[in-house]
Length: 335
Ligand code: P6P
Image (cartoon, rainbow, N blue to C red; front, side, top):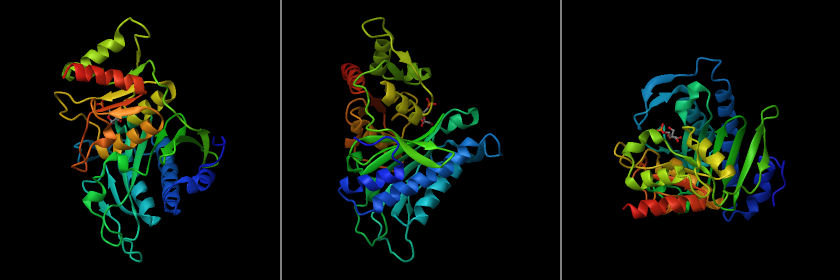
């Protein structure tokens, strides 16, 4: 059991040896993410005070209006990771293609790639509702010493060596796993230090919260419609409560603490759903499974999907194990 109030820095050092690839580079990588999280947190917390709110007038490859904080968060995480000379490549929701990092003196010697959604839930920025950052870390599969390639990023979620998120909410938390459980650290803004506040986080096996954008109900597949009606039925432990923040990180975080399920299904208006496999669903699925929860596309585990494109989307069902399994039952029955 980890000691509460350990700082994130102490935790990384204390647990480095338990990580099978413990060469110190992963520790440096997590520390780089910690630094970038503090920088972005500072900007998010004062967004209303300076002219940083609002769209920059561009759209990203997703066709979504880029909010200024999206662009800033993207720049801060990329710059911090490049400066630390730990990764050989980065993919981001805000970048059309992956970034190959060839620091002059070490000629592609770094062995990790990072995939990020720098600011998830950005539609919430202008209305002061919590947003988040999601990250996913893999070892490269192409030879060290060569430029990173697309196949280094198109790895199934099972191959992740670490994943986590930062939620910029009433407090700022960094939650991550390296495959040995999930731990949550809360930032003390006065000290700029993350402290272990939520050791060994686990999803309750079931819960009473379902998170889905019911505005899309008429467009959902029959199995999803049937599951939503099941959640609303006066029977047994139901009706459940509907809670949908519009920020995956925030809905996921609340559901992991209280028990619940998050769904972003495919629909007649979103053929494969909205969420991106590589830098949203895979990292959240790694965390979910490490926290004894479950994550699927309604039928099969998210982390078993073999990626084909950098920004591909997948339907996403994630949360308390028994709730995801019940939703999958409805999906299979309606198939
Ligand atoms: P909708 C944010 O853009 C996001 O990717 C998730 O964080 C969030 O859960 C979802 O999209 C909200 O999408 O279509 O319900 O507004």
